[in-house]
Each structure stands twice: as structure tokens, then as C-alpha cells.
Length: 576
Image (tube, rainbow, N blue to C red):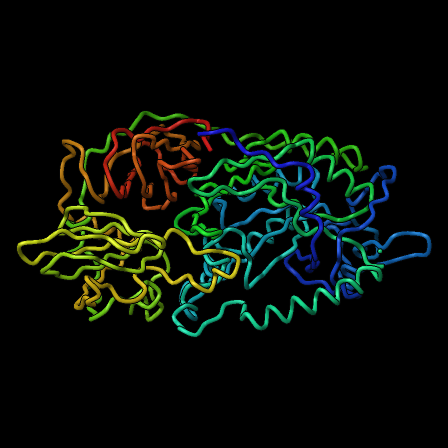
């Protein structure tokens, strides 16, 4: 799959040259900030100093009883500015873990490993799009129980920096903004109106040059020190250099600069939550959010972890907690799907389709209490009685069929497809996949998915569409139980669902699905969406948490877009 791309030390330092804002520290409460911690231009001269031995054992959420003082800044003559917590000098050793990317059953394990490494602070984003999937309908339950996550961190002895957004980037769909915002045709997300941006650029060019010399009187906080990077489908697997990471963190500490490691534990883009990049071409972020972080996607220790722990142990006066045990992994017998269900056989078992004279984009479909569709696929059907040049604007990719026969692909760059002459009227089907909304850059304004605009043949608009929403939620799969599944006898071409049974022992363990003989689609285990797989790489396995497996038999369903594979295999090691 090619040589993993490695980041240079130079790039690590470039990431420090940014404007940072320091949020509040929380642990189930919100202490006040006495002094305004403003913009920090972090291109500061670092003056190395001998390591101090830090003792913050009395400054944990459960031991700090007096909350009246909270987080402040202080500066004395002859010394650099620094943070204080409860009146005591405090240096933030932060590490990022996103609760929504980690199975709730593993939260405590990941937080204990953060504490055992020597970190004193947890940071996390709050994804608006997951917490309010429909207007006025909030979800803070299960894996989205933010309060429980923060309280658990406090119990373990970690402070929390909460990053509530509303825009969070984070390589998540639309940067964490809910897709129903796009129902407004005049919506300009994050107010990136050209005239406004140009004015701000000019103002900052002037302002920052005057502010920089006036800084070196507030403490510096590196809010995101990137120790790795994310991968996109079709790209290379990105890795960082552990030596560079430790060297940089060491300089932070000797210079008494607080910092947050992004990511300490990346987790997984389960389901459809992944975002995308756009630099001339749309590239979806892969399912794994391993990020080459301090802990792996599955919560295992890395070389970075042990090097950072060794560094922290050398500067902390109190011994670090013992290392939590590794989460056990297993390899299970291969699964050969026994039944399959072509997409076309599914349609009659779905909710009533939308009938529209013209195509309707995903977000504007009149479903889900008027909130439209956020993720997944949309199938558009209409009758045609002649061939010619088909033109359609699709976001992001589309398979085009005449009846059940594939005739080509469309995407945001390929908008035309020639349809040969036909003798009688046939059903034109366009299956569009939302591969993830761009999570940063100006392109965030153009993220409505499905068919956007009219569909034409020889410049004549087509009319009379039947539109099926394919969100692939738990209720979606409940409906499939009533469909007539067929025995798998030979290879099938076209979109279809494949059903098999993954057999495990009485004590399920973490594993990784290997789908090397399959093409592109999504994997579901006991109704849970593990995320996208694709033959184009770089990711070759999908993380399957043991906590989501039942003892003995587990239902596994693949939605394969193009061509059936043979076996579904597991391995006890990831291939990223």
C-alpha cells in the first residue's frame, strides 16, 4: 500500500506558529477566569530551563475543595507568566480524547491510560451535529453522554478542557455543524462571505504585527500540538516521529508552556461521521481516526506513549499510576456470507419514498420530522424512453443504472454520461453516496448531498422522480428482516446486502475486520455501523470493539456497492 508518510520535526514546530485561544478548565463545573486569557502568538522565543519537579497531587478535581479561585494567570517580576489553579502554580499537560469516537464501555480504560501516562488534563470537542441531529431534538445519551464522560474524568483525577464549538473541524462531517442548516438556500456557514473575509485578512495583517511585540505577559498555551495526522481514502497512511514529539514536548516543559496533545487517543469514525477534505478533489477521511496518536485506535500503547511517560515521570514529584492492562485482542474464524439481498429487493420494505417532480437533495427531503436526511445514500428513480447525454450534479459519487444494469459512474468532476439508444422505456436509477461533508475551508458552504439541481438528457430536464432515503439506521435493518434474502451461490454485480454470522467465544474480545476481497461499502455488526471500507486504501481493516460483540453468534451485514467478495476475515492487528 506504499510507504507511510512521515512528518518532519520542522512541520511539528510550524504547527505551533498559530493564534491560540485558551478555553476554561472544567470538571463538572465551570470555574471563573480572573484574567482574560487572550490571543497568543506562539512564535515565542523558548528559553530552556532545568526541569522542575511538579507536585499537583493536591490539585485534582476531587481534592481541590475551594473552587472560588479557579484558573487564573499570574506574573511576577523576573519570571514568566504562568497559570494558577486554586492559587497554586499549574502547568497544563493536556491530551485529547473524543468521547463520541470511543465506545462508552472503553471510556474509563482510555482515561486511566491518559492519567497513567502523566497527563493531568483531558480535552474534548462537543459535536453539535451528533447532539442535535434534528431541530430541537437533543441526544445526550449512551455514547453521547457528555456529562458522564466529564464526571468520569473528574473521578479519575483529570481536569477537562471542553471545546464546545459550534464549529469544531475535527475531521468530522461538516466540521460538527448539523446538516439541516443546509436546508436554507442562502446559508453561509461560519460567515465566510468573501468581502468579510478579505476585510478580516487586511485587519489581522495590521493588528497582529502590532500585537506580537506586546505579548511574553500572558502564559502560553498550545491548544493543539499535532502528534500525527489523519488519513483520507486513496491517500497514504500518515505517521509521525516519536522522537520529534518528545523533543517538542520537552521544550514546552522546560519553557513552562502549557500544552494539549492532539490526539492522545483518536478513536474511530464509526458510522457516517467522517468528514472530508477538498483541495481540488473531494477526499473522504477514512474510518479509522487512529491519527498516529499516543494510544492506537484500539487503545493500545505506542512508542510515543512510553517516551512521553518517561519524560513526564522525570518532571513529576509524585509517582505515576500503574499502567492499565491492555485490552485483549482475538482472531475469529472467517465468515462466508450465507445470504444476500440486492438493493432493488429492499425498496418495497422501506418507508414510503418521496415523490417529486424534480430531484431533491438529501438535506431537503421531507423526512425525519422535516429535518431531512443527514447521512448515507439516496436512490433516485425516473423513467426514460430515449438515450443520449445524461447530465447530473452529484455529491459525492453516484452509480447509474438502467433497471438493474450498471451503466456508469458520476461524481463532482464527472457530470456527464452517455446512454446508448434504448428500444423501450426503462427505469433510470441513480444511487448517490454522501461520502462525508468537508469539515473546513471555503468548500464547507457547498456541502448539500445527493442530486443538486436538475437531471437532463440532451439538455431536456427529466421529471417525475421517486426518491428513496437509505440512512441505514437500526430501524432500517429491522425492516430488512422481512425481505426475501437469497442464498449466496455465485458472485453478484451491483449494490447488495450480505448476511453472515461471526462466531466468538463466551468472552468476546476486540478484533479487526479484514475485507480484502470486497470493493467498497459499509460493515454492520449487530446493527452497529462500523464505518466505510474501500479497496482503494490505505485502511485495510475495520476496528470491531469486543464490547459490541455478543457471546457466541453475532450478525454481520455488509452493504457492498459493486461486487460481492468471498470471506469476511478477522485479525488481531490493524492494517492502516
